[in-house]
Length: 370
Image (cartoon, rainbow, N blue to C red):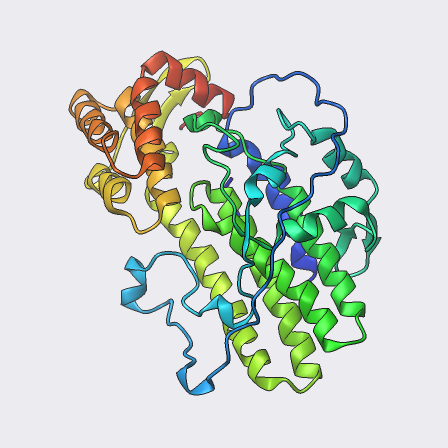
């Protein structure tokens, strides 16, 4: 679930598909599941409205300095107010219930999602999209007008390495499809309706801040939506809108690279020794455990805290005796956190910190050490 997120506005969308295909398995070890159920009936989203973007005051617009020292402590979130481009809708429904239904393993609408993937068509410089009148694409639209997306634990239980994710290729497909349709729109307002929907979808995917791959896909979707707005606004002489879109698009690569850097900083796998039939051990450099514990207990992003908790699980199982105890003590403290996501993740990690179980999980992930 870690790797490059697309940068270019069009071809990069195709790369995002490769990201999900290649990295989704790194989030979780998938258990065998029964075949997906037959197609379900379309589900109508609750009625919603979408507010107009906030007025743009160029005098208050800044370019965030993601390379400045202060940025090392920033949450990996847009510093520019995305309401200037695409406010979230007001719908009372949980968009996570609808999007989560298409999970490949246990999703009740998995077969429908896979069928939609099979009927995509190729568009040059954009990639595979659904036709503009595709029923699933049309069904998805009002779900992007809801105010929230919550999948954990409303749709999927939190279970550490075995936590399930939805089929993230589908929201990427919807985003590409709306970009393609918006590019053909004759009127500026019609184009903006599609491009803003793309950004709302990305915002919803990032909203929960639980799973890294969901967040990365949401970031990629916001990026392509902002770039599409920039292109159309620039052509139509809406220069204030184009300026905001350019700033937003420019923030995405910094968040992507800092995401990778922060994950790498707490990655245990490079310090594993053994594997391939021999017991694994951990050879942690000085200060590594302290950094890992700091991220798990006080990191600015919840998804990064949860990733660090899973790394602590490995330390608690395979580290030297002293570090095992420290890791378990940290997990026990985190299990009492007020944040239900963090506490649930910590409890799962603590309950599954036996060496044999962790070795089995690592074998399934093909993490062999050196």
